[in-house]
Length: 270
View (spheres, helix red, strand yellow):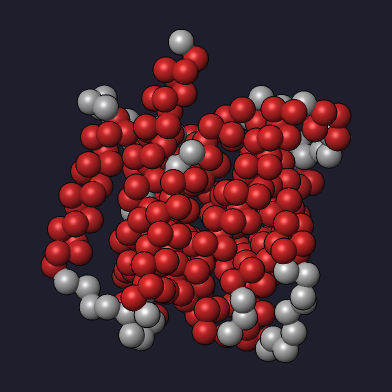
């Protein structure tokens, strides 16, 4: 049990480390690809990778279980990233980073409401939340004044709430007894289905000629295989071992890692 608990912490740390650096690949790909194209291609690639790893189909699911998988796919994949990407078009990236980092707070509240057996929320949790958000704000804004944009910031808050719901659904899905790879693959499939209705209203195109650029191929491999297939699987495993509240706290580290990696990238370009 102790070793499993340690593995949960290690996988959560690995996940946020990779998620915190995904903005670099996304920024590079945005030169030729739209946000929805990047989202669609990376999760298709992630689904293919998970199928190769575990080709065994998931059998014996009930309608209730499938609906939970659907809810997880919509909340944690298609809608979460849609809200986040649209928020970035209305407000500053620093605003989005700070607001989305409130996901652990929403997760804890929802876990208290919907889940039994989760640890009781104590005063130190709320104190820790305030301290963490203050620290994240100082790092993200670097002394600059925060400029509010009601629509963009509200969309970012919606993304944080969607991720909280995703964490609740994952906790429920982990009780079904399927492997982490099978669960993640099914969630990705529903997430991709959730994107399909958006494609006709966007500038989506296959554009295979764009994949002739090795830089784009490398960054899609990182996003599809690393940040999607591997990271969602490791995150789901961490939630299974640690619970929703403990795992979600690691999200506080994402904007910090993003700022550090951004500084390293700027230094490397000089």
